[in-house]
Amino acid sequence: MEKKIIKIFEEYLSIDECATILRCHPHTIRNFIKNNELNAIKLGGKKGIRIPLESFEKFIVSKKYIPTTTKTEEIIDLDVK
Image (cartoon, rainbow, N blue to C red; front, side, top):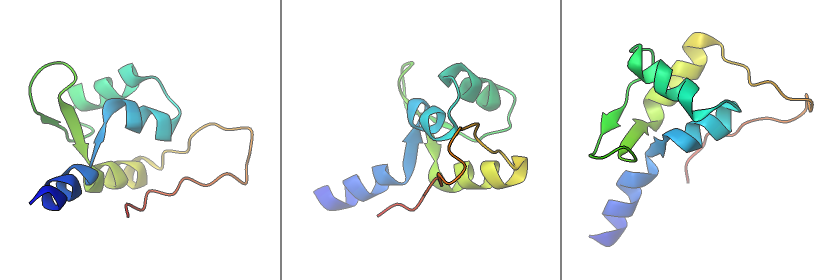
């Protein structure tokens, strides 16, 4: 039972995790959610917002979002293991 619960939570990202991946401020992620550009689930409280990994991946593809970086060879790997 415990492994199933952990697996479910691996399929969701926090706002901070999304911001880290996109190299932007968490407020930017909150604005995407507020403007219905990015799907999110509210679990309760301010820290209880989670973004489904599948929605996040679709958002990146649809926006053609390219994080700013000085290292052009750096690649973001979104695979969940």
